[in-house]
Amino acid sequence: MERAVVRLLRGSALLRRNFPTCLCSWKTPPRALKSSQPEALPSITSEGLPCAPLQTFTDVQNTVVDKLIENHGTEEQKAAYLTRLATDKVGSFCLSEAGAGSDSFALKTRADKKGDYYVINGSKMWISNAEHAHLFLVMANADPSKGYKGITCFVVDRDTEGLHIGRAENKLGIRASSTCPLTFENVKVPEANILGQLGHGYKYAIGSLNEGRIGIAAQMLGLAQGCFDYTVPYTKERIQFGKRLFDFQGLQHQVAHAATQLEAARLLTYNAARLVDARKPFVKEAAMAKYYASEVAGLITSKCVEWMGGVGYTKDYPVEKYFRDAKIGTIYEGASNIQLNTIAKLIDAQY
Image 1 (tube, rainbow, N blue to C red):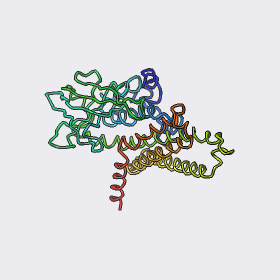
Image 2: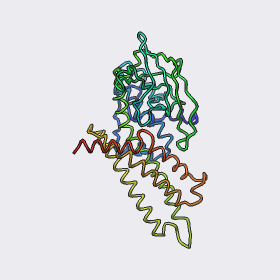
Image 3: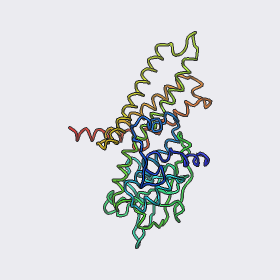
Image 4: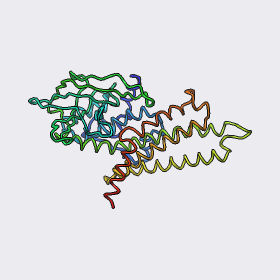
């Protein structure tokens, strides 16, 4: 993503919508929009701006980084970091590693205590926003003898000695969203930079990912809707065999099916957001929304390429980009099979 775009995003409300620092003062929040309020929905679902990379950029900061600091940070950390994140700074969340993808707590990155600071060594992969981030929330194991219960969250500034940010990955889709590897070589972090409690990082990661999945569902919904909105008018203009493409019943049925899937994905997503706002259990519904919206985005964008025929396969039209961007939805913030595992586990507990 070009730095000029990042600067515009940092100055926009897109990076401040979800937490109290809209007025650069987390102690005096304005009336916050709830996730399920109608006036908030277009920005959440990207329906006004169906660009997956931009939504990824803002979602990481709004639903993960900001939320973690707001919910678990000390008063000093909130004062130091939330104001910066609300004005001109970008945050990044560092969990995944080469051997810790879907098995997200099989972390090898360690944080060894040395007096009043910790020394972090290890590496991270697939870190969104890393290229432009000013601070990183890093999950590292401070006590490997306790397994995943030793995982702790540390706040690490970009200019900390020993932190190295690798070259952005050359991805299939969401190419404007930077995704980089990170390495930590004897990175010294003050004990005061522990976010929340020692050994509670795994809890914070689970909580943030559960809520973040609603953001991914919204992203996929907006992407699919944007692709659908672009393609259907084309089918009403394109003439073949003396008729509009849209006049063929076979295509009409496909369009109707896609529209129904879109609406179902929308309602699943809004319902999950509503449950969060109501402070009710939402994990199953978030997994359902993320799973279904991601699958629907892949199906609809694929159909849109087909409906446009040869031109849909070219870069002269945006549908091929929607198609490429949609694939990540079934992979990140919990692959589709992980969502199904979560749903099944909760159904088992329910009955």
